[in-house]
Image 1 (cartoon, rainbow, N blue to C red):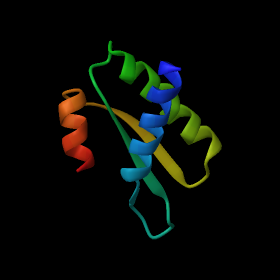
Image 2 (cartoon, helix red, strand yellow; image 1 turned 30 degrees about the vertical axis):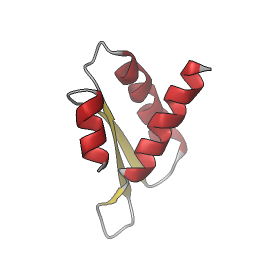
Image 3 (cartoon, one colour; image 1 turned 45 degrees about the vertical axis):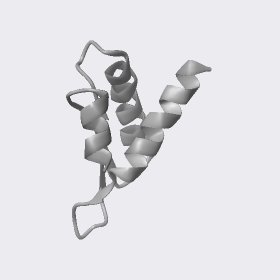
Length: 76
């Protein structure tokens, strides 16, 4: 159950971070996560890879941040 909540959290965060970056309507999604050894980054990186493979005209990256407090600030 906890894993589903974490995945949903990252999916919702990704939706808020979608940015239009070109005239061809390619979208870029930045998934904010803690350090590379942290659980949320270990989920964010595969999520970005799935988005890149399955959704056309969208680029997703998992970005290392200062963890939860900074992630909330970035969404704001």
